[in-house]
Image 1 (cartoon, rainbow, N blue to C red):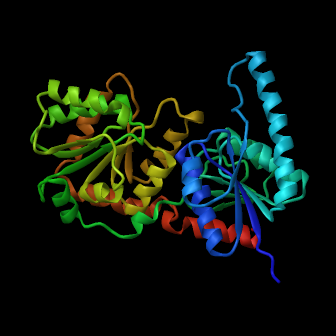
Image 2: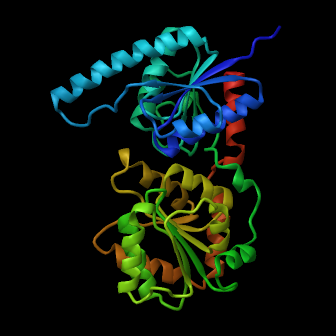
Length: 369
């Protein structure tokens, strides 16, 4: 009787850290593997794991303090060594054939525990710069899978470009005309999709309101504000005299992102790893506005992965951001040749298709290289 191979995946936290591990688990389960997730205590990923019937265990782990407060560092060390001891017991009980970390800070104790037990360790970095969790876990890894090309990669000799998994919903290409009709938009008018992630982006929201006012009549837009910013954006559009404008569709949140992307000629968004992977799959021209507070400035590096070859524009949130955003949109409006060139530039970005990324990750783990 052949015993199923087992994998322990240390994941969770933000979507960019969780979804690659989740997609990998689904692919490995289809290949006959058993999976155990390790997440931080009370992780927001737990409902998704429960819905998919993936077992999980929790570590009471915190991020490495970025201050010099000695009490914070002492508390971190206490939780770290407690988490390491628990991770070692998990590995002894579950007996995995491989341990995978996807960037969350629970990956470090899991990777170290696996190394101490002589078990192969793999990490996946979805951003264009290694986060602290993966830098630490990378000290013990056998192989690093990359979602984007990483400049100054400290693990270059052990790295493989695999891509970042995106949702299966993107496998069915949506039709632009049908998407616009479903959203109540004009068929032939230049259309912009604006979003800042599931939580929204207050500064980006405000800047686009100003841009929409300046460009009134020249564009139509779908604006996904994030739930906590929805009311403020509605007030902003009302003050700009755009409340109820026929070419403006404002939502707090949408699940059907493939439809929204299909409707758009241009995307304006943050540059998280998952968004960049979706844009690369769709070859959708964009204006990327990195989150200024992103750890290690990784969102700027993600944006440059597309802006470098010309597939996107990268705008920083400076004092003149509102005017710069309006000018950037105006310069792209009615320029189909320039937009087509941006779409073609994705071929030079060297980013693997996210729909095949979970299989590529699984291949790396199964082959051990």
